[in-house]
Length: 100
Image (cartoon, rainbow, N blue to C red):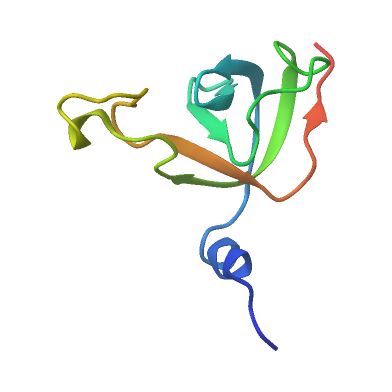
């Protein structure tokens, strides 16, 4: 049986369950956890209107991933850059909307 790349990654890191708020950012759909962690949701450019600004529950693997050029890579960038490498959650279950 051949193991897909995503299966190898998820086998190494157990999924976590996080509750927090759906936010917008230039680099994509951002999630602010109840504990104060900020992370992007892999593969989402923006939140659907019915989830933006709402409380949600995410289940997935959190890792650091380069999603935008890093500012220090080019001293005179001609495009938007980002400081550092952000946390990203790769979802393993559908997003759940929480009732406040």
